Image: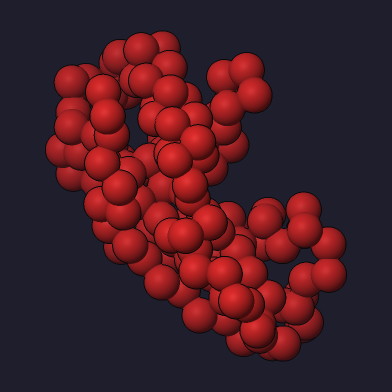
Length: 128
């Protein structure tokens, strides 16, 4: 992986998730699920952070990018993430154990052989 620049959108997404996961694990979080699906809805990363569950949406871009990662998560996308999170919590009661759920975003900007990570905690609030 000498060249981190990604031409394929799918490769870019996977590589971004790999970087985000490594970043979050280094921060002491524990992976509960990756690419968890319920129907057509997906959660990129579900992490345990102490006594909380963090639903993490990963946004990967190649430099230069004119799209802000938070702006790319519109109301419909947030609604889908929240619906999937409800499904995850419902199906994994033992894992979630009544822990509070938060929604984060990790933005990865790839530039040739380097990348920049931005972690946005509590990026949006659920409308349960």
